[in-house]
Image (tube, rainbow, N blue to C red; front, side):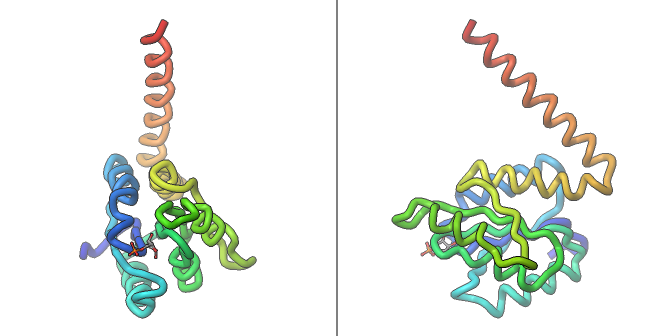
Length: 164
Ligand code: RP5
């Protein structure tokens, strides 16, 4: 484990990794240091708490948590930290992610979890939001975010041009 890490990504199961990888890849695009953990609010609750504390000692500024079904992981992390917690609801159960979306977004007052779209888009946006949080006190990160937006704009115009 590195001594200074900006983001900790938690996911509830190894089965979540293919989607959560999009968050990791996006953080890497922004050169943000992170650690990733497969730990479950229900199956390994003590290890979740221990890893939150270790993350904070390592200087983590933002937590990202992805889980499906009852999806208590983001809320369980928010219960233990005052750092921002970004929740990614995942599809996988019979309810296709609606279960995880509601579980992640419906936090009681005083314990916020910023909740993103279900699945890969949510994973990417959670990572961009982590970059934005870091960018509030880091001009270089803020510049990278400006460049990201400019490229997105150019890509859409290019796609439009390609079908004319
Ligand atoms: C959640 O239950 C996990 O985040 C995962 O999305 C879902 C199913 O887990 P597995 O049964 O695939 O381990 O806790």
